[in-house]
Length: 220
Image (cartoon, rainbow, N blue to C red; front, side, top):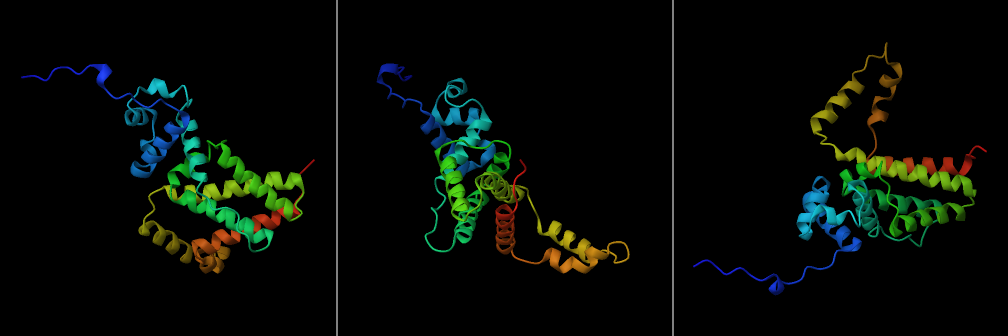
């Protein structure tokens, strides 16, 4: 015998939609299925609602991805207590990059859709505070924060592709076999072009940028 239809009044009420709940569900989908699955349609399915209901809280997918990134920024470690301001600044930037490297496809999205939530504001405030504590003029510190975050985000986004060992070997071979008569600088610098661990190169890049920000005035 067919089961009797269940009255809507007997079904448990669905939790009310909130922006916080939507973002939390999006983060869970990201961790389980990747950024490509973090869509309004997939999110609506997860929350047992219609996609149109979500637009009341999030305007579009770009804003959703930015909100997800802001949520993940809450996991970035606080400013370390030891070291001078340059060392502390580098550690914060390294922690930010490490978080993005766990989700490189999100980093690629962040290149065009920046977050604007409380965790992002806290990160910007922290970077400005460290730069100002080192005596960096306010305008240089402001432009410097943008430059530092761009580099960190781009570094993580670079890993969003499907790199293969074969591609890396092909690049290394091309650099090492470049003829000295037509490419003398590459021939002389091939080993240096390929040297260094990713960690060492990231640290060097941050230190180079920080030193440049400290010494280079912005135009009037």
